[in-house]
Length: 632
Image 1 (cartoon, helix red, strand yellow):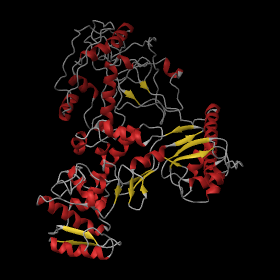
Image 2 (spheres, one colour):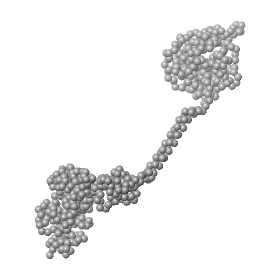
Image 3 (spheres, one colour):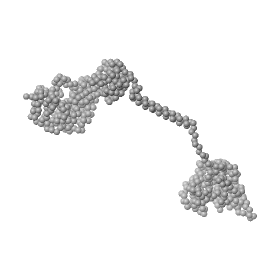
């Protein structure tokens, strides 16, 4: 006896017991519970047919028999014409299921007649029964050896009837009906039955059938996917309506047109801005305003950075109200090079007048420009010819002193000497390698001699204090000396500050650069022999009048810088040191020379190893009237 069949002999002519309305409701209501409680292998047994065999799922289908007569008819042929299929009614959630009595065929009566009657099924325990080994589906399922499905916890939100449901009733998702038949066809509404149907087609791929079965089982267990499908009725899918191309709404079209318009406006603005900037750079839109009064109206100090273009000059002068327009200044300059720096100019003057003041060779309109040549000393010196050579302090005073609309600016020599004598080495920007020597001579402004390198100092600010001016110049000079190799390329055997002192002697003694390494060697050889240097340049450092022909009391001057009187190097450098002189002292030429003398006004210098040879060289200088002391 099959599961779910009744053993009551009272059956209808179809051979199956009649199914009452109550029994049908019980079966439909309990179908989900039975599916939930059934183990995965049993579910697969009822949902996955074996390969090559038709479905024997007990889905009922209307046959061509008379109404009320049902039963398993092998090779059942649908009553619908070819190409059409009967479409069952889809029952909406909560809707009423059409009630039809279910009949089963019974054995023929004694009179040979078959009587159809409705017999309710007997209730059985709620536990699902395992599949019988004799069933073909079970054996085929075992052959496929599909992995067990994950059990689904039973649902508790729906009451379950105690009566056993027909486990042979398995729901199958059927193909969509033909387009010319409607689901709610009245011809099917009055005769809703579940009948056995054969497998749709053996040619259908096995994987598709298995996927469909899996989908149906998941639908039984998943309450969240209940979209109106009711167990026990054919699940007919509505044919998907053909997709129509979307019509662009007017609002979307308006938005797109607006975006395009904004993009066009942006591009036009960008092109216009670039064009305007280019034309402005070329000076097309610049004003041609120019003043006419060459005397101007007032004094003004203008600071122009180095490497500025003529247009930069023009903009700075326009901002200072010196010229009327950038274009007027550029045209007046006509490409002439102009150095940056600090200038004293007049406001509201013609552009041509401003160009003349900026390019004046005398630099009378420059402010704060100090030129320190190699060998220059801090103090001004008077030569034997009566000519005064301004010292570094005097040049700073001349460069910074300026009268601006009746008000004087700048520093004086006295202020600079005071700052150099009494300020701390840190305040003066003295490097560490010279700090000890400078600090030991506090009170003497000459202690910073030689610490200012020869250069053209373009910007010595008039409004700065003397200490600040000296600090800037000494700190920058120390960087220059170190870059020339004072600390890392010193082969003289002397300390950095001593090397600078010896290099200052070379700077004052040599007329030609190629003689510098030889003079450096003479200094180094005399120091090694503990012999007095006896250099005229050291004696002239403290003399009121400098003279290459040292004579008389000058030899006996009691100063620390007089190397005729004291051995060794003087306490400080005796002049500013240029790079050639410093490099010569850093690496003196090899030789045994102990003497040298300049023999003519052209600066020719003779070197000697012995004093006798030196005397002969000195006679040559006497013959050329270059010196007179010691001549015969």
